[in-house]
Image (cartoon, rainbow, N blue to C red):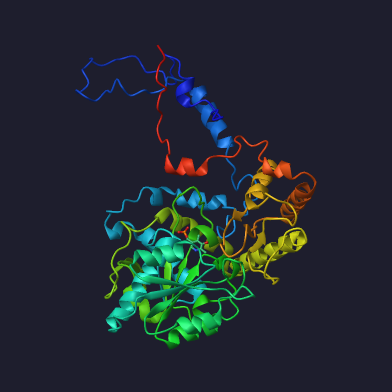
Length: 490
Ligand SMILES: *Cc1c(COP(=O)(O)O)cnc(C)c1O
């Protein structure tokens, strides 16, 4: 059953084989310090070509955005331009040490300051911190700022955040981490947050609402301004989950519709590779009244006097919630996002949003006869379809996704948002060509036909992937993270 895909590197080991010739000893021999060499450390004995082939084979078992479409809804898996990697590897950036005196890292600080400024301009907010390490941490930062702001106004009774039922799991999770109460709001029949439910929940206990726009159904919240008014009306604040900014970048300012604080996912909207738990960055933008609550420190620019160049340093916001990250955040991600923004310019960023929306709507129109798309509306950068077919039993989102792997493409996000049964959440992104979109649509339509003709093909899928169906829960609960030689048989 559990045949390993590939021999482990230890299984390629042959006693005495080596990859690196050690030069002949030309100094007096000395004993190594006691305890430095561990005889019990079972290092594999392999040649250079064994190692090269082993890791190349492993890398080829993976699917990557550099290989094909990766339409994971909510994740915005767009192509990552290679220039981002080049700038992130510039020696001055890679070699900078976080303990270096400020005067010796002016370039790095300027980049952080400029990025803060660009993000503020893109979003319409008064100030931005680039410290948070991910969107989820940005949420935590935002909620902590909202709470501190209200506490400073003597509003000690406020302990609740409203979260729509379409929200990403991090929204209730980061709110709960602050010890606050989460109250869920239902969606209405157009896929918007239900306004009547909102009106009945707002009261003096509300810290605010955490809302995603466009929401995770890929739909623009049609009453976003009214939602802000209702929440502000009861003294609460509006947190915007900016993970879906890809649909709006360059088109609208989230701050203009009453949002008080919002995180950006640099690793989504502004490229930079992500997935597999790699580093991201979740800057947070705030409206004027929250500027003094930003995490400490924020990068500040001081204009030079009499034509001297500006200098960059750190500002400590007076009511700061404190530091949220060691050193200065995920600096390499900041360089990538900065490069991406500079390469596109304002007009290019608007193109990003327009093409992302166009691509999603094209794909939606091509497949909507075969896959039921609840909430019949023009979508933004992604859409959610139901992964099931009438009259075909035991075929759901899982089977469709596994079958997509057989066809050589990456499946979409599935089972999210929770409010759509067997959800398939498809986000092609702006970097896919018409040809690539048609290819994906053709495969989805073919799978719908297969479901009618031979549903077992789907139930047994994948057929030609390196592995069949995996015990994902078992792998997550009991991960085997290091090599354990099998017990020798006598
Ligand atoms: C990705 C995402 C988040 C969380 O962001 P991370 O950077 O993964 O922590 C929150 N909300 C939505 C809608 C998202 O898509």
